[in-house]
Length: 284
Image (cartoon, rainbow, N blue to C red; front, side):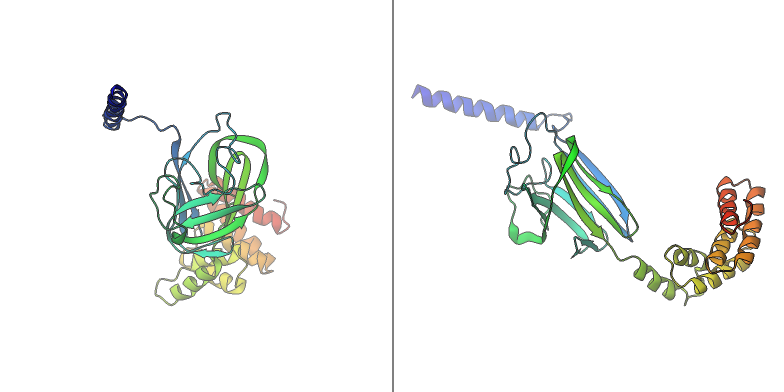
């Protein structure tokens, strides 16, 4: 009887203090701090919200995080990835939205999971029926130990990048791609039907992506007619002229751009127009 009463007292006391702790009028930092990262990508953005545990001398994979068990890919709440535009994830299309990012670590292979149920604490309520995407990736061994779980974007270009998961001595690379060029070209063609035609930016896009260069040159010439004293337009006009084989015109345009930029003391476009002149074979 005494033992029963003692246990009951301990139970009540524990829950009393537990309730009090939850009602503290001030903030206590979490043991694993949260981080939110956001990356412009294609025509949208990708953001990741996750909590960052430390190794603290522990063995992580095949230790604290066993192989073959679904992991929240962080601490506290499951990691959440939010897309504002469609993205190809390891060749699989993922629609805009927010997803919990789970993973199943393994010695030679990881399973990466995008699950449509967000705001999950841990992986305790994980439901495979809510998965929208599953695929496998090979882990890599890191040369240097990563103490704090790190999720980051790497090798970022306009239409592809890596989403990396790095912790302890293990790295995971998830390849992301998006169709930018074809969509931009379609948008350009549609915009050119309107009254206010985006000559300048459309021509720059085509130059940078080696698309429709003859048409791009015509567009930049139109932009130059509208604003003949803009050194940035002179620079891109010279670039397009040089790229389409008209070196003589490129030198003239670059010299005009150089003078205009010098008059405005714009060091960037002074340098850039000099680069065109150098590429055209002048003494710059």
